[in-house]
Length: 152
Image (cartoon, rainbow, N blue to C red; front, side, top):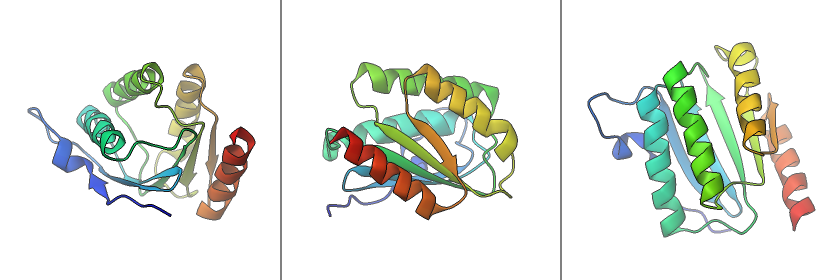
C-alpha cells in the first residue's frame, strides 16, 4: 500500500493568528487518514485546506477515496472555523476532490462530542457526503471499506 508522509497543518498556516489544535494527515492507499486534537479555530481549518491541496497535487487521491478522522481530547470548533469548514467542503466538491465517505472516530469522553458531531453531520449532508461517527477505529475502518467496495 502506498503511503504518503505525514503533514502537519502548522507548516501551512499563514496570517496573523496561529492555528489552534493539532491536525496531521497522510494517505494509506485509498484512505486519507487524519489525526486531530482540538479545539480548532478558523486558521486551523484554512491550513488544512492548503495542506490538502498540496497533498492531492503530490499524491492524487484514488478515483474513489475516503477519509478517516480520529479526534482526541476535544472536537470543539469555533463558529468561524465551522463556517470555514463549510467553504472547504464546497471547494472540494467544486474541484471534484471529495471523498465518497467520511468516518470520524470520536470516543465518548472527547470534549464537545455530543454538541459538535450533529453540526458536522448536517454540514457533511449539505455537501452530499456520506458521513458517520464511531467510537472505535475498527468500526470506522469496516464502514469505510464497505463504502469503498460499494463504489468500486
